[in-house]
Length: 222
Image (cartoon, rainbow, N blue to C red; front, side, top):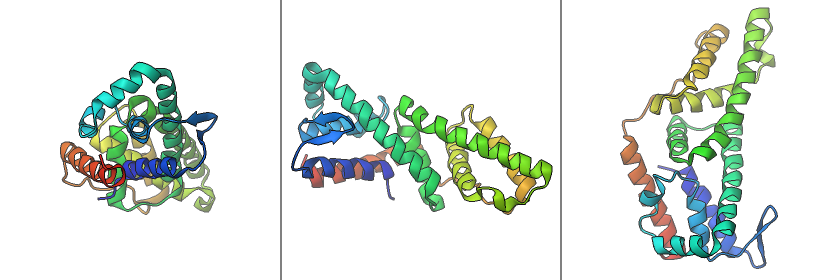
C-alpha cells in the first residue's frame, strides 16, 4: 500500500538534509536538527494520532524543543502544514488515481490535524460547489456537456464520496447534491462511487505507522 502522507514527509525531510546552504520555507530560515524537523513534519497529523504514529521517536526531543524554541517550532509547523495542504489539493484536483489510491487518500485525509483538514477541504468543496452550479445550469438549459470540466468534478466527487463513506459529516449534503446532478446529466456514465476496502481504520493506521517507521529508520537511523 502506498501512503502519500509518508512519501511527502520523507521527500521534504530529504530535501532538508540535502540542502548545502540555508534551508528556507517561504520567508523562514530553518535550522532545527533533522529529528526536530521530522517532529514538525509529523504535526500534519492530528494530536490524537501523533503519539501513536511517532511512538518510536523520543518524545523528550519534542518536549525539549517546545520548551526552548516553541515559537519558532510552531511557526515551522504552520508553514509545513500550508505547504502540505497546497500539495494535497493539487493532487486531488489534477491527478487521476486508482480506486485503491483514492481510498488511501481519503483515509490519510481523516488522520490529518483538524485545522489542516479544513485548509484542504474548504477550497476543494468551494470548487465542487461551483462545478455543481455549472452542471445544474447545463442540465436546465440543455447545453452541451463538452463545456463542463468532467474530469475535475469526478476527481472531487470520488474523493469526498469516499471520505463521507468512511466518516460521515455535514459535507454529505453537498456530496449527495453532486451525485443527484451527475445522475441527471450523465445517466450513469460518470463513475465515482468507489467501493470501500475491507481494511478497518485501526488496521490502516497500524500499517501506515509501520511504513512511516520503516522510512524514518532507513533514512535517519532512529
